[in-house]
Amino acid sequence: MGDVAARLAEIVGEKNLLAGDAIPEDYTHDEGLSLEPGKPAYVAKPASADEVSALLKLATEHSLAVTARGSGSGLSGAARPSENGLVVSFERMNAVLEVDTENHVAIVQPGVTLSELDEKTAAADLTYTVYPGELSASVGGNVGTNAGGMRAVKYGVTRNNVLGLQAVLATGEIIRTGGKSAKTSTGYDLTQLIIGSEGTLALATEVIVKLHPRLAHSATLLAPFTDFDKVMAAVPEIISSGLAPHILEYIDAFTMAAITYTAELALGIPDTVRDASQAYLVVGLEGRDSDRLDADVEIAGGLLSELGATDVYVLEGPSARKLIEAREKAFWTAKAAGADEVIDVVVPRSEMSKFLTRAKELGTASESGVVGCGHAGDGNVHLVVFQKDATKRHALLRGIFAFAVEVGGAISGEHGIGVAKKDHFLALEDPAKVNLMRRLKKSFDPAGILNPGILFDPVLGE
Ligand SMILES: Cc1cc2nc3c(=O)[nH]c(=O)nc-3n(C[C@H](O)[C@H](O)[C@H](O)COP(=O)(O)OP(=O)(O)OC[C@H]3O[C@@H](n4cnc5c(N)ncnc54)[C@H](O)[C@@H]3O)c2cc1C
Image 1: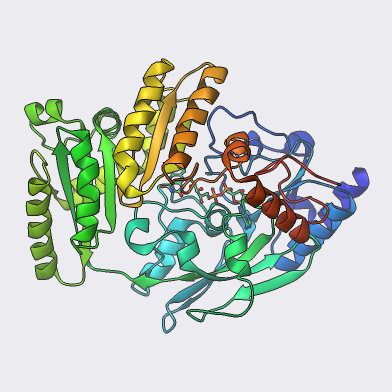
Image 2 (image 1 turned 90 degrees about the horizontal axis):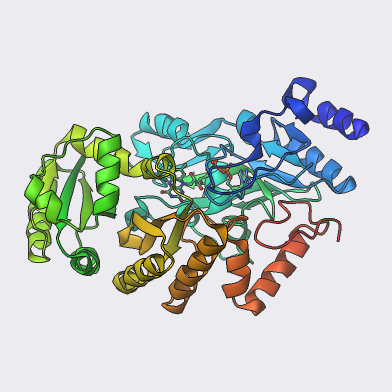
């Protein structure tokens, strides 16, 4: 192993290699709840695709498990390193290489955080619209998880916003997929295969992302409902209205109380309305022209009332921002409250009401707390689970996931499978598809060095 350490140091430079006890605890986990950390033997911080290539060649030679790491904000344990493996941390590859205002794309290194990219694109009045709640997340991590976030209802998720990659294969080969052009019909779409593969197929070393014009005006409407089913029934109606919200979130009453308390946010909702509310819809609208936006706000307010909202509040700039931030930080509020798991099941929008009713019944039957909020416009339900008993929690999650699959949904809409949901995924997914995925993994990564144990059981050195 001394030899391995010396060769790793040769590749990235001694000061960019951490080994053994010098590795800070932060590198041993991501933000997935109730997961054991994994202690890597090395953390290497490359500065270029060539260095990543050399690292992977060395890892293949020594059957060293490799875990790519962006910012470690993932919620499924997909960036949790293998015991005694190598973490390739992209923190030094954090440059925005180009903002191309003609083609509306940016070329970035994977370690760029969403807040850094936002700052760079703002200067050109453009924006990268993938916006998971955690702005310290990296673009490489977005690619790894196919991240979504609140704006996906209008702009789509990562796979809809990445046009191409530079990626390093486990063999050390460096490939380019896609490009700046808007489309391609040229063989298998390797960009899309790598997106969402949780660091198991290849490591992204450059990402070409789509940019959109930054719209100058926005408004946020908050609508409390006394009846949960009406909230869910309102969602497809709002989508059908053509108002094209860029945010369409639901927040249940428990979660709203918790996040507003934590953020010390007073929304001006009378106590009687608040006490009678089962859930809230948050509708974000944006536009180029303030008069047109005002007209849309008027229409949206009327529609929400027709659909059963007790009242509709148009939040002023600072309160709107604070509410969205509080919603983005719902995970931290849940974690501070002792949550044992956060899941992100996705179902067809039309099935959300049925799904949530069943999830709550299952929670009650297993004496667990099940509360939440979610990207309602995408049918993406984030449930916070309070159940300390691991066996009971596992059985509850299996029931919830199985029901999601039964109604045409999936275990994860945006956080990925990682280690947290692996055995549910393997139990509920079509075995023919899992076998095909395994064969794809084998073609990309014959020695099984890339994130072994994520998605499938480890096959390192097979
Ligand atoms: C408070 C909070 C709110 C969140 N809200 C959302 C949300 O609304 N929507 C959402 O989708 N997610 C959300 N997340 C989850 C998380 O922010 C996203 O999954 C994000 O994409 C992870 O980015 P990261 O840089 O932290 O990746 P990491 O956690 O470091 O890694 C995630 C995965 O990507 C792989 N990876 C990292 N870099 C590369 C690379 N260069 N090439 C290949 N694979 C790579 C890793 O191996 C791992 O499998 C939230 C997290 C928190 C803490």
